[in-house]
Length: 465
Ligand SMILES: [Zn+2]
Image (tube, rainbow, N blue to C red; front, side, top):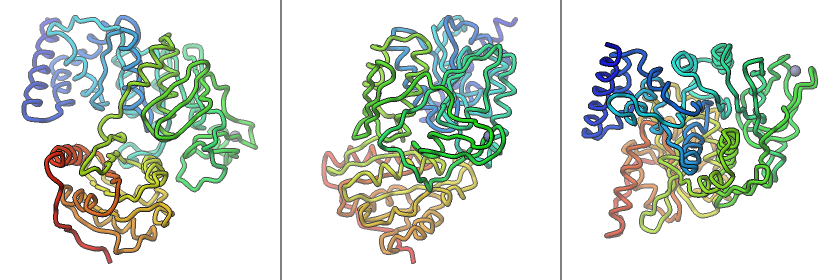
């Protein structure tokens, strides 16, 4: 009876996945949700057929990139991997991944399962599967209206880890990583950067977790790598960065990232400090799992950015960079890539407030946009789009942009064309989650079209006053 229910759940799930793909949807959640409804133990059952390890990747930023990189290393080493790579990171999405990659009987065996998991889903996931390793990338303010405060999330994760035999891989540069302590059943390995030449001693970016997790005193920072990640100490109780096992050394950030972990030199086509953390975290997990240096080096070297993570397009000989933004820290990082680029450029920003974006858009005021309007950054036009185009326009206005440079065009395609249609060589397309795939579709279409004839579109949109 149990076997029959499992088969039924998988068959229905597979059917729903196919149907939803036929209809042009991602279909990454509801097939799993239906499968779990038919047989609630489905995930536990399929996860029991993982031969080696189940690895969970969670944290605020960098989950998708980091887990994609780890999966690439495992495959490079020749292992079979189940991985919820669509970024569907709650239980139904994870169940969908298992259903999709399994056979109809649910008996297929895999070497590893790599589960990118929303922080709030960790307790539910740990009731179903028994991972041996968990990576927590970092803890930043993210969509607070959905989950409540950071410390509540950390408490919930900590409680769910009780009695689990698990190895935690934590970001030692994040003071919040000290909320986790090794007990009999748990061991911890930290990753973090040595001082780099990109560090700053004064930082106006929004920061979480600047207070000591032990005594509540304000932390002293001797350097920041980015946001609240850096070298900290508590004058009151002596709390400080833990001993780092996986040290990032000799960091070079140019049009690519180069860093060293122990004897392993890594090179990646990604950009930005936050991606250097993703690479370091992926290497820490891969090394902890016993993967070879060669597999790690090759996988990181060949791994290309995915949708919305600095994906590049070429339209009318102009470079277009698509970036997903969803919280102040991520936006600050994206904007520092924009500022570092010396070319004349325009910025397109699509701000939506659908449920998946987070209804509360006040985070745009927490991001550090203040010196963006400086002439040295060479931003020739800002096009504000999406459902809340007016709000983001007001935000840019308060950063000091000449209002003649700011346009509102709530239609995505017309707005992107506005941003393309000015004398610039680079266009940065920033988008919140629910506008991302539409922006990407438009960019792919324009890229294809520009191969045939130059893009001529009337400049639409209104000027903000
Ligand atoms: Zn303290």
